[in-house]
Length: 393
Image (cartoon, rainbow, N blue to C red; front, side):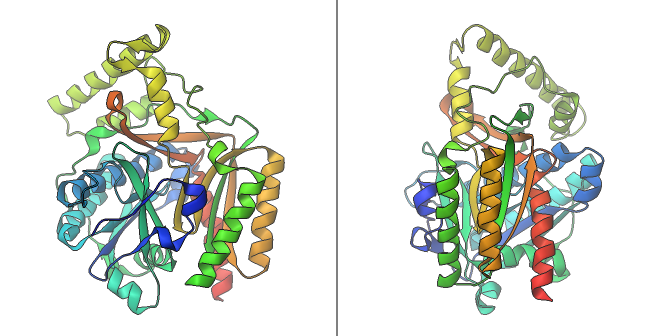
């Protein structure tokens, strides 16, 4: 089965007709960091983002290695995976279940042992979600040139995330093992300050399932678009404000080193980080073009291939807006919640953070994961979770 592609988020991401219902023999892979509160308080938000990016990198590699994609070609980028700030999710066909399970268990072991970032991982069968009356629709956000990431519509995605967090029967134990795909993962860009006044993270889920819930999300998205057209509100803008540095921060350097085992492979990774960073900086200072390296094109591509807009049952947005626009968006959300249509959480930050999955930037094979600084997505999700608890009681 091939997942359909969405090319225009604004017009299609909330439309169930643009998605495919996942068959009952498919699975949802779910992973999230345990103890994000502790890690955020310790100033380790970039560690959390990096682990979330590692989940996407590893599962994308597995899925791309196993799936036949029905003539679309092999996906480079994030496949049907979706970055969530402190975790990730992926749609998994039955032939990939074993390999994905092994990768998840290895990721949980690696994150805990190497980075002291405990990770909870699990797999939820779509059949169980269907039996509970929870639709699970999926599609790919298609940037062209094989770069994609996953969108999810329907109550199944949010339910799978909750089930793994709340019920041990859906979880997988940590287990050492190989983790493919981490060689493409990096977080070398510094946090990018808001162009306007604030970076607003929005997470909203419909309270109704099926057509009524889809309609509520469509109305909400249309209202947000009238306040701040999201196509123009990406935190990375056109990429021109991304400034290469001589070297990444020590924390980013250390995170990348821990994707390799100690010894010569780690030393080789260190060499590549230093040389790659210096080449990018030199090229940038020479006007943006040196042989096959075109940093102006790469910076534009980084902005174009970022995931600041996505669906995971409802919209997940990271928007660079004015304070007045943020106030108006939150007022729209509050009205929709008061009408019993949605539950939502928001957070604000002064900057956006970027985690990168780069295959070949000179050939435009790369995708980038955006969050609000200090784990903006996670902070918004905490608000949403508290509200869900009140609705449940």
